[in-house]
Amino acid sequence: QCVCLAVKAIVFIGLIALALRGGDWALGALELLDPAGGVADPFADWRLWAAIAVYIALMAIPFCPGIELGLALMAIGGTKVVPLVYLATVFALLAAFAVGRFVPQLALIGIFNSLGMHQTRDMLARIQALNAEERLALLQGAGKKVQLLVRHRHLAVAVALNLPGNIALGDGGGIALAAGFSRLLSLPAFALTALIAVAPVPLAITIL
Image 1 (spheres, rainbow, N blue to C red):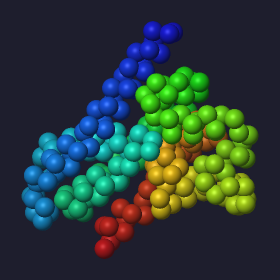
Image 2 (cartoon, one colour):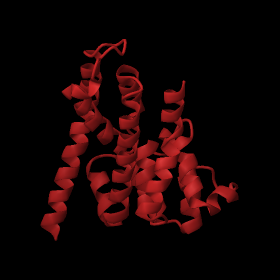
Image 3 (tube, rainbow, N blue to C red):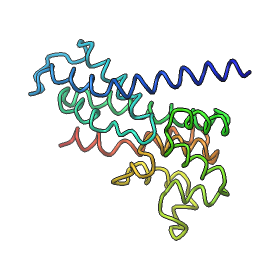
Image 4 (cartoon, helix red, strand yellow):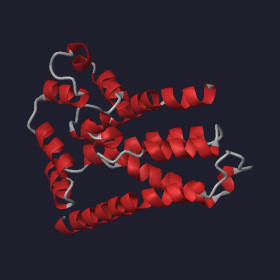
């Protein structure tokens, strides 16, 4: 069991390192595409798919905003790429949620501590020490005064995912990880919440 956990930790660390280094590369690769959005078929360009993979990884990592890359993907690829970016965002949030939900809590805190990601470690440690209501309040980031949102966990998470400046809460990946770590939502319930919460921006870009 220790060997299995060590292998998982090594893979996890490797993915984070690759994602962090890949962000700059992805932005540079996208700049090589036609900035006017005149690419005939962006889906035929391997750089788009590579950038999508990097975007998923960045979005899933707590306190690592990947929205800049997502916006660049939509700006360069045009409306045809918007659904792909939307699905990639939801997938990234689900991946972060699954890690928080199914990896043992103490092991997860230890992994982030070994990675030097102290903000994430401290966030998870705080959640572990709270009761159910306090965990919901922390996910919302609004304290105990917002009782309506605290009582409705799915709404609280959806609001947190769309809050301006939610990097303070860990950004999308951190919020999803915390939601899974809190053990307050099931995977299907979070999936539906993410599908709805992520939709407004892609819809607005498509319509406008």
